[in-house]
Image 1 (cartoon, each protein chain N blue to C red):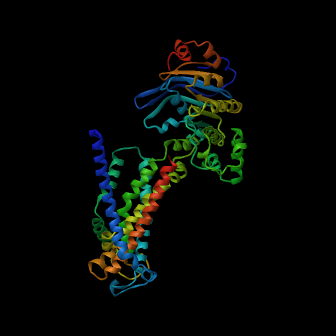
Image 2 (cartoon, chains in turn cyan, red):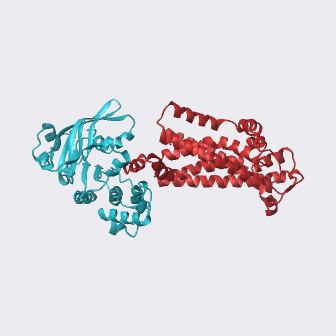
Image 3 (spheres, one colour):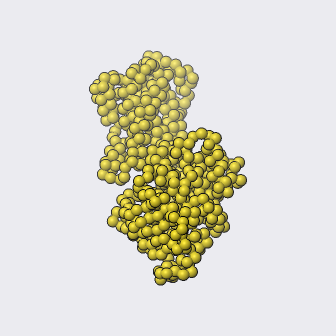
Length: 257
Length: 278
């Protein structure tokens, strides 16, 4: 589905008739969705609706699960992602997870991890990347004197920012966020949402959340999923004020989920 | 009047406490017994001079050197095989009949009496591969013997690394081998070292497997193709032949101190690993 109002901006990332299976279980059913460039798209729905699976198929992370396979197409800039090298794809389509899972390494080494696996080893270059990435998530002033400190000693919010910075360090084009605030307190959640609003100027962002208020606050477009299907997709204001499907309305108004 | 469950509870506590104390008492008794007879034998001269009259007099320098030599050969050979197998089992295979067979094999190997390893090493390394009684043959035999320990402890250490950390590495475009080298192994290192050090302890303490494969020569081994007598073997021979009980206890005391030190290091590493990964 392509949302009204996005016709002019071509989709950065899109799926066509995408189905995802875990063995004989079909977690995502025939989903077609377009993620417009430089905008935040939220995917909402109750637990087990397939939203995380959809997200993880976009950078082929669900392949790490035994028995996972997909049918249909996923297009990045109009090109089937299965024609790209998987490592290149994951570099271009970054991901942040639910838990602020920093490596048990220093702040510096956490951020330098991605560039290093892609072959950047010059200290000066790495220093530049670390500074730029930390500035992008507004951690630089807090941490510039503590780059050698173990990242596990940071607060939850700092760690989740660090995870975002670590992803930005490999210069992705699309950011996938899988419930990035579910382990954070409400204040930290607002801060991360502010950050996402800033980042969307440069990046295409897809965020999975089961916090509807968060989707309403932060996203430009919203897709509602239920039992593996994409029930409805549109601009966030349309989904939240004039949902077309009774199921969407029921979910939005808190009747289930 | 005290209620019945309360009485039962106290009796159970008492029984368990007595059993624990008894176990502890045996350990302390052995340590005290050996220390009382062995500690005073330990002098710089005893440690660093050559034995005379078959060990009746003089020191234990050659056995010290042979012990270190053989244990190092065993560790250097067993570690890459053990860690490699553990990485293969955890990172490169999914649970299947094959991995279960490999794991069962490793467990079975761990339960084989050491004298069987001695015989195996004698037939294969000493006779068949013509190494003769040598540090090399003894070290290789011990390597086979401690392999299961290293495999299983490394495997546990690798499995303890949260899946989420691997996931992050993959999501940043890391390959499997990069993920293993940069995330899995560094974090599992304390656990892997624990296994290696426990293996080291077993190598140092082993008697039966070594006497068959490294011989019992009291000369200082120059190369790994020379035979040698480890401290454990030396103790066994001194005691069995009744050559010098005094020197036998001295050797035993040194051996026990070394093993205690090795196990303490292993324990500290294990503690660090569990604390770090919470």
